[in-house]
Length: 142
Ligand code: CO
Image 1 (cartoon, rainbow, N blue to C red):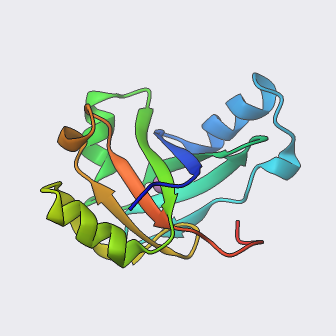
Image 2 (image 1 turned 90 degrees about the vertical axis):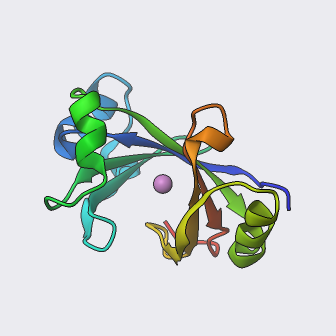
């Protein structure tokens, strides 16, 4: 297994709308390159993407009282860099390979924000960085 392109950088924020404003006004990202915000109840997040030339920033905000982001934002009240996502050709093969190498795979493959399956690898396996592996989305998926 070899990771493919960097798909996005996940940033946990207390307010997606405020974060969108920052990317619009401070960093000049046009409205047309910022997606609408939607809810992913199974993941406990609200999510939106900011498109940049070669990648995306994934803005994630807690949804519901069991959101995994609540603890993160308690430690980082202003928000913070949460995870990095790389594409892989086959998510099940990637999960098996990670486990075979002794890495800690957090949960089973599940549907991610791009509509393809994702897994997360524990930060202790990658210098403190939470890694998301995502099966490469089809062309045209957002
Ligand atoms: Co992500």
